[in-house]
Image 1 (cartoon, rainbow, N blue to C red):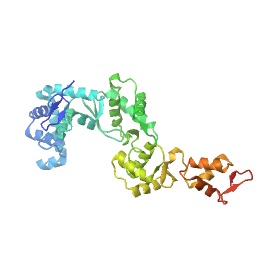
Image 2: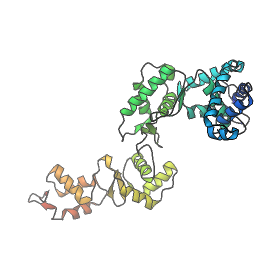
Image 3: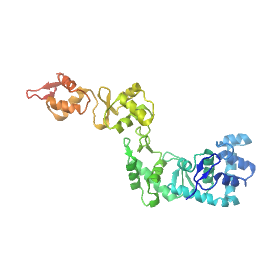
Image 4: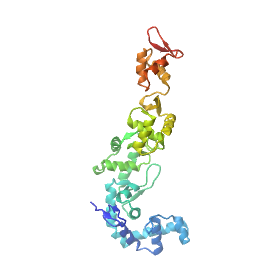
Length: 354
């Protein structure tokens, strides 16, 4: 197990070696311009900010393509230098870390695991670029930027992520434990050392099409249930988590409590009115349509009840409507008196007016 070491800035990394010292020694074997180009490109100098090819080109009065050539030539020269061989221990330790994190890991996850210090992260990134064991997976529409050391494992993980995504609908919200189980079922023939929750969660973060919402539930990253954009999405998650209808004032309060976001009462009410995922079930009370609540006023609910159940007594209608709407029984009775829509038969049961 690698020991942690303190950086100059007081941050702690988990490499067990000194990345800055190793990088500094590697760069010392290069001519001055090659060295300064790499320092600028990777943020290895006094400033941790990485400099563009164009900016470096202007500094030296050369084209950006020429800067790229200098960079590539310098990296190739480093791999042939004696100092590169001396860095093998550092490469081996980084390889162990990548493997311990799952064999394939998002670049941000990897760098943040090792250290939070930006300058130190730049040095680690440089070693990843330079080292032979490390393969880079370019970001695209499917996956985030990531690094891996086992091509076969990386391929299996990526295939499993695609299969997992294809099994999700836009409305799915899967608890994390269930999502992990689903993903593991998609993976075949992987080493048991990688079959743990933390590794699987890192693998899930490799995908750009699968995401996690603020409540820790997983689904399609593009879904509004996962990619929350505003008050109405936070309101949906809050009401769904609560599990029963809420007044819009309670929804606003819950948004602030659960997500730490300011939610003005009037704004929350307006968003609930406009969002088809919600149904007004009482005075200021909202439920989720997916719970089986039908849209419409009390009269519409009565009509739906009679269409589905046929003739019913007043008491039977009141009982069924109160399951759909948070209103007083008298409100249902008043609506039944509307002879334009409802008629009471000799048997005391109500039917729809044709």
